[in-house]
Each structure stands twice: as structure tokens, then as C-alpha cells.
Amino acid sequence: MHNSKFGNEFAGEAGRTALAHHTPMAEPQAFRWAAPTPLDRETPTPPIPFSGRPVHLSTVAAGPGSAGTRALRPVLAAGSRFLATASGALVRVKQLWNRVPRPIRDWVHAALDATGVPYALNYIAGYEATYQVDNFAGNLIELNAAYASSSPEQREKLAWQCKRIVDALVMRNGVSKSTHPMRQNRILMKVLSDTGCRLRTSAIKVLELPSSTGVAALDNYAALSQYYRIRAYVLGDLFFQLRYDTDRQCIFDEEFTLLQVKMKKRFFSIHRPARSGERHTLLTAVLLFPFELVSRYLKAKYAYAEARTTIPIPLVHPYVEARIRTGDLTVKTMDVFHKIGDRYDVILCFNLLLRRYFPLDQIAQGIENLKDALREDGLLIMGDEESYAVARKRDGQLVFFKKEGRF
Image 1 (tube, rainbow, N blue to C red):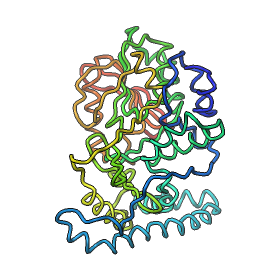
Image 2: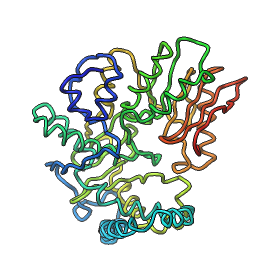
Image 3: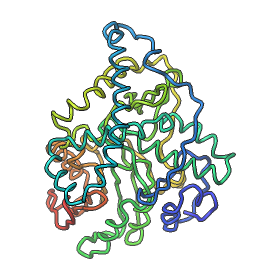
């Protein structure tokens, strides 16, 4: 992109590294969220207080036909308090556990991972920090308004707060919106430098699914541009904006599926990360039953009503918005588990079709849909941040020929 003062303050160190790969573009009109930096470079900053009116379980009026949920209200409030209390206790236990020698910890994790216990305990331990009220997605509106008039120091805090908000945003499929610059760059550059992975065409059409806020796509676009002329680059995801019901202080996705409800001291995320993955077992369901109870209650209580007014909150990175305006990028709502309905030369699918998120049969269906969306001789590159696999479409079938790690 560019090396403006705005860009440097906005993205931080990792963002500046990523921006060096991009071509100049129009200055973003307004701040909407900040490019996260890699976790190993994080420097925690105090959260910024927000003035939005909170909602508490004890003050919510019962909806139509909710006599049963009215009777459950004390139980549900107790369940919410239990999660917060257990979170604090497990944080202290985890600190002690981290003092145990690494080989012993690895052995215990390997023995217990299939039971789902580590997943449940880690989720509860991180609950209080992750779902504090300052990480509520509705705060993105205030952050957007505050950015233009804030000092450089305040902008840095705003950037970190936006990162925390996006990290805590979990979609209805159990996948979070987390992302950061250069997330797939190492893997993509390794694939592109391999002559065995080259395409026979000089101009390509690319699909990145999921694209999250689009910030990683900027680096991927730059990397692919070193080898091909990009005819089209499509960002695919379940949704690209939120809907905020300010009266009831709750967040919906574009299809008005409830995602978050703001309470007095924290917010509640209706969906839990990796809800359908291999680490979610019957034992996990038992351990996290208080969460499930509150989730069901809130989904019934905060069902979307057409008569209510909601405010749209864009989730696309402002630099990505600029590339959309120039026509370099386009966005398209899509679900990997349904037909995609177009053909691409290259498909990038990172951090989605993983066993920690979905069962094997569902992953197979997703791969089948990606295969159908791939042109003959096209490349499918899948993986996470540590491992990957590359397949080429031959005679209508995927042939995997390059792999690294356990993916």
C-alpha cells in the first residue's frame, strides 16, 4: 500500500511489514478495525472504556411465550457467574501447570486431547479475558468515530482493542474472525517458488475462502502478482458486516443469526469456537453445559424482529475497502459447504477445513465443493499457519502432490 503515517500507526510493526508489499492506493476514509499483529509480538494495552448501555440477564423482559425461560432466569444468571468464577480459578491453575516440565505437559495433553478435556478447560480459563465487555463487537462503532480525532498513542490503543474485538467474534459455524497480516505468506511463497506448482496460464482468477477481514489477502495478492497477472481476486466468506441492535445491545450476522449479547460486566458469545470439531466430545458437552444453557436462553430471548432497527457494522479492513473501490478485489458471500457457483485458477483455503473445527465428513464435503469450483489444471492450496497441502485438478479430480506438516 503506502508508507503514510496513518498506515504505520494503524497496522503496527507487522502491519508495516505487510504494507511494504502493496502498491499505493486511496487513503481509507475511516477507521473500522485494526490489523492484528502476530501473537508472539503482542504488547498488552489497557482496554478502552465504552459508554454503551449494558444489559443484564436480571433486567431483560421476557419475550412472548417465555414463561419457562422466566423460571430459568436465576439458574441462567448463576450459570453465567459460574463461568466467570471458574475462568479466574483455571487461569491460576494454568499458571501453575505451565511450571511443569514441557515433556510431561506434552504427554498429558496427548493422553487427554481426544477426551475434549483440554479444550473445555482452556475455553473456560480464557472466558473472562476474552468476553469482557470492552471486546463486544458493538464497540466498533465508537472506535470508528474516535479514531479520526485521537492522538497517535490513543490510535495504538484503539488498534489493539479492535484486534481483541475481532478475535472474540465467533461465527455461527464455530469459526472465529481472527486474522493478521502475513498469515499465509510463508506457505504461499514456498508453493509459488516451486516450479512443480506453476500454472500454464499467465493470468489467473483467485478465490480466497475464508477471507475474514481481508487483511491477509493483501499479502497473498502481492505474492501471486509476482508470478501471474491477476484477472480477478474474490474474497469469500459467510458475511462481511454485522447488524447491531442498539436497543437490546446484541449483535447479529447478515442473516440475522444472533452472535453476541452485551451484559453488565461482559458479553456473551452465542457460538463457541470449534463447536463441531474433533475435540468437542460428550465430556466436553457436559463440562460446558452452563454455557449451552445460557446460549439457548439468549437465542430465544433475542430472536430477531423485523420491526427493530439495526445498524450495519462493516468488517472489511479499510485498506481492503480501498482495493475494492479500485476493482483489484471483490467480495462475495459464500459457504464452503454449499456450491460455490464459479470457476477459479487458484483457490486459497486456510484455517477453515480443519478437524478442530469440523468432522471429517463435513471437511470432505467442503473439499468437494472447492474441487468443483476449480478449473482444470487449477491449484487448491489448503492448510493452517504451520502445515499445508497442494492439489491440482486433473480430469475432474483433485491430485494432492505437495504437503508439509500434519495437514
